[in-house]
Image 1 (cartoon, one colour):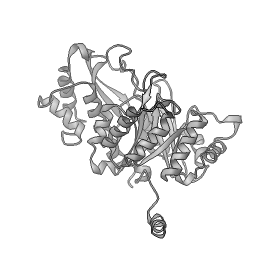
Image 2 (tube, rainbow, N blue to C red):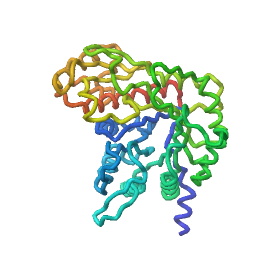
Image 3 (tube, rainbow, N blue to C red):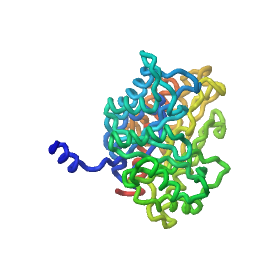
Image 4 (cartoon, rainbow, N blue to C red):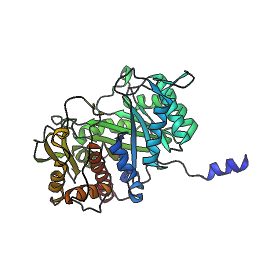
Length: 378
């Protein structure tokens, strides 16, 4: 007992963002491509990067979930992330959705996810979406934080969440912490801009007052600003062309340092994907495309016609166009860059969207991590 108590006193507190405001957070889905990219991420990048993993549930709300589903979800996360810290959230999945076991006993899915993640030694921080979840969900997050001792994260839709009874955002977040039995010093605040619509102007000066109210709650363990400009459909880039989509989330974050906030959040985004899970099998066949992150934009090389009809061979031409651009970082820059270069040279056989989702995500993670190191030295 004494040895255990001594060890607990000596161990440093859990810290999911080792580099502070220079650390990078990417909200990723449990789609094969994103997980492939994580599996291939280099150790140096991992030291400056933490993923927010979102387990994507079935498209049908009433679809049965069993223990094997949960084992598969957490197993794939473990293979991709290992023992690196991660934030853990759910998408398209109700926390209290029953899980059917072999004995026909039903349990809430989120509690079972946490238990399975624990068995696999995942160093996860449970995430609660403020104002978007019920009491049962909140209780499961609070219980996980107490059991595992790694704190929790509050994910706040900074543009849309309204506090009840017109109380200030400061008082509202303080009340949420009390309800979760959580200390602000061991809680991370994820300020989520979600998808920034093309016709919506978001200025740092406009966000400043609300962010300041959130910061007034206390000394959060970490504060992160998440957002993306990546649309769900790429119709803004004509078929058969190479276009660019401005990374407006980077611009907003970069400007926050100039408006006098007492604490500048760390940067986060959704990598190269829209925040809403793609509806596989719906909305027609997607066009072949390869996405490549640069300093201020995402370059999109887009093919013609559904890739299922035109064939994966068109990816060779798309990769050749990217490799020929001055922004291309070189085959050795990341696993994803090697995939793009190998396909362009004909050394690597192109495959389905999983390959290109993974390649683009891999490059993005390395690129943004390096970009942050230059912008906010630790």
